[in-house]
Structures are given as C-alpha cells and as structure tokens.
Length: 197
Image (tube, rainbow, N blue to C red; front, side, top):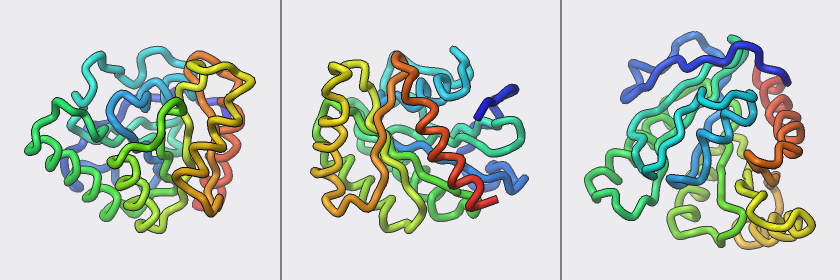
C-alpha cells in the first residue's frame, strides 16, 4: 500500500475526542521506546509524521494518524517505563483500557515487541489483555536491524514460542533501518482492512 498524504489528526485523552468518521483503526501497542512512532514513519515513508521521543514514556495521549482517509494508525501510550510514577502508570493503563473497550472501529491490534529480548511481565500482561479483547492481532518483532539478518527468523520463532506457543497468531520481523520487511507488514494490514471495511 502507498500512502500519499498521511497526516496527524488528533491527540485524544477521552472517548469524546476519538475521530467519529467510522474509518478502520489499526492500533499500535507496546512498551515505551519499542519504536511505535518509528514504525508509523517507516510504513508511510515519512521522517517526522509521528513524533519520536528521546525520553521513553513521555507520550500520555492517544495519537491518531489519518492515512489518506482510508484508515487510522492509532498510537497508544507506551507502558512499562521504569521512571514513570505509579500514578502515571495508572493513567496510561486507563487510556489503553478505555480505548480498547470503547472504540468500535478497531480492525487490527499491532503489538510491537523488541526482537532482542524475552517478553517482560508487562508485555505478557498486555498480550493477555489483547487476547482477551478478542480483536485481531499481529505481533511485530521490531528492531530486527539490531541482529544479524541470517538470525532474524530464529529470533522471531523463539519470541513466538515464548509468548504464543499455540502459534495461532502471526509474528513478523520489522526494522526502521531495514525496510525490506515493510511490504509483508502492509500485506497483513490490508487483509484486515478488507475484512473490516
């Protein structure tokens, strides 16, 4: 898929601010600094559409990005940042839970993990929450450029064995540096856009 005019739409802090145009929403979840903003920028071939932060855990809102009026990428606040206060963690958790339960336009949840590391306890909690939501889910093993390209498939397989031993979800590698993975991810996203027009 080629996106010609992606644009930032709104940062929302409650359901009243969610876009009401009924476009499908592709939702990104993952811990702070896992690369959700870079994922968006790479997928649409832009450098600064989604604002990346050098300070993990800074995002406190839900950011909606309109993709040629076809669908939204929705970037949820990152979780698991060690310097985030308990109060802030509760706020972030509420944003995530409220959105996932109250949005009626979610076509796919993309759960980003760092390919180099075993899932953390927070990752496992989020994974269970996503599964319990009963919404379609794609797992992205991000930062694949950090390991040898010949080992990427092995790392993805190991990540799936740890998190999804039933192998009933799709796991795919991704990298903002090695853009060879983008087409495969687009193909998977398009399946869900067409299934949920």
